[in-house]
Amino acid sequence: QNEGPVDYLIVGAGGGGIQTALLLKNHGYTARILEREQVAASHWTKFPRFNELISVNKRIVNETQRMRFDWHTFLGTETEFYDVSQKYFSSGYDFYTYMNRVVDEAGIDIQYGAEVESLAMDDTPCVHLVDGSTICANHRVFVATGLKEKPNPYLRAIGGTPYSEMKKEYAVQKRVCVFGNGNAGYEVAQNTFDVADRVFVIGKHRLRLSSATKYVGDVRTKFLQVLENVHSKLLDVVLEATDVKVRTAGLGKELNDAQREDLFESVNLAYVTTVYNCEVLVIATGFRSSVPGVDLKGERFPPMENWYSPVGNSKIHYVGWLMHKYDFRISAGGFLAGYRYLIRNLVDHIRQIDHGIAYPHRKFSEKGLVAEHANQRFQTSGEFVIMQDGAVIRDVIVPVKTEEGKTEYHYYEGVTYNFHKDFAEQDDIVYLYLVWGEGKSATIVFDNLYDFEDKRSVRNSKLHAVVEVNGLVREGAEDVDMEFVINQFTSPIRDMVRDALNGDYTNFYEKPKYEYSREFINEPK
Image 1 (tube, rainbow, N blue to C red):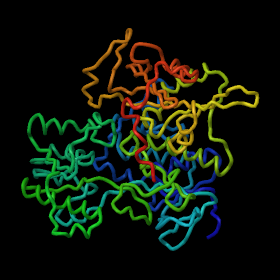
Image 2: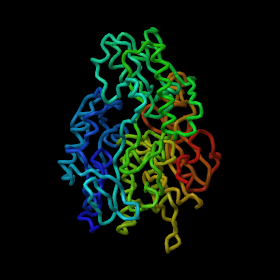
Image 3: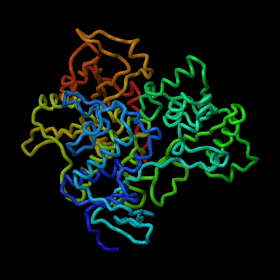
Image 4: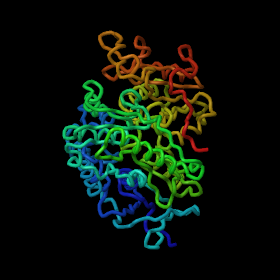
């Protein structure tokens, strides 16, 4: 094993790999991506199956708030996704085109046709390729191998067509049963509804709408057209097949969790196939993480330790989708918009431990300047909006005594749990983040409108600004112009921050109040 030719190796030329390489290159380090395919971003040439993204593409004229709405643009490049596509719902191919344009413009080093078989597990920055060779980096390896379609041999055996192979023509004048009631399932339903005889959507759990749960991985409202036909016109059926029992005469004791889940689904599918006389069976039961040489044993994410490292090797880090083990179903992560900020934090951490460069932060000598900066951050920060609930991404204000005995305020912007957890035992640390209000239903937007001077302020379903200090919190609600007010009627965010810095907790209250007080539930043990 020879010393690698580059500072850092990256496995996978998808969104996570490209974002990592881009940030490392911008900081002056050499990085090479190992990609098994012959093109970058090959995932987006295959998915979404009907080639339309679920996230909207909208350019905001107000430049300071642009990244609050831009879900598709990399950090560290002047090339925006909107430069490639202006469609409101862009295509997977648009995303593929954008990623490859960024690769070319940035001159990112990619070694194509290099398939990694496994990761080194001896605390070295190395990977083993399928051709038997081993490649090492000077410092670290980042694994950005993302997702793969969940295999299901049981369902294939009884005639199911995988989501990745489904075509519209298969559904013409057929009774179509879609197994899986997530976005993939409803994508198939919506794109075959016009030609199929009947469409049935079958799921193991109740339908979860993103507009109600606030988690973007749940079913998006763009699929409400097919739901309208189901519920309002009674044209088709959504079945929750959770009550079908699997009886294996003790065989279940010999199966692992993944096999039991597959068996459960196969029995469900066989059951509904008979009941609904299905002619076309579509397997849209989702995706799972993909890690070279790692058996996930039915788990959604691989085991990992602090700063996204696999157990036993601190020189390797998971990036991209794999980072969302920490915040799955908590924030809006799972896509470039979320993990771009997690990667930025990881790169800042790596620069600190590998090269002695301090974690980036601002220094203020006056409380008023700190409060004004915090107020501006709440209006403009994309990471607050996307990685909401404060469990993962926060701003942190740390009071530090100088040699002259004065207090200096160190302001860390948009840092992850891996960083800000180290301040948990210190007093007078101020945290800032956004949370959802107590209402979870989209109807609250219309039911609970409150007057605030000459504006209309949405009470519950909008994001609320939170200032936390010494276990106490105070919140403000966001109005329709994205300006924050306290309790809809009083002073702005800067006053909340100033009170926290001054130790005036008169209007603060103890956690918990809403769900943002929950512990960091996905922290590795």
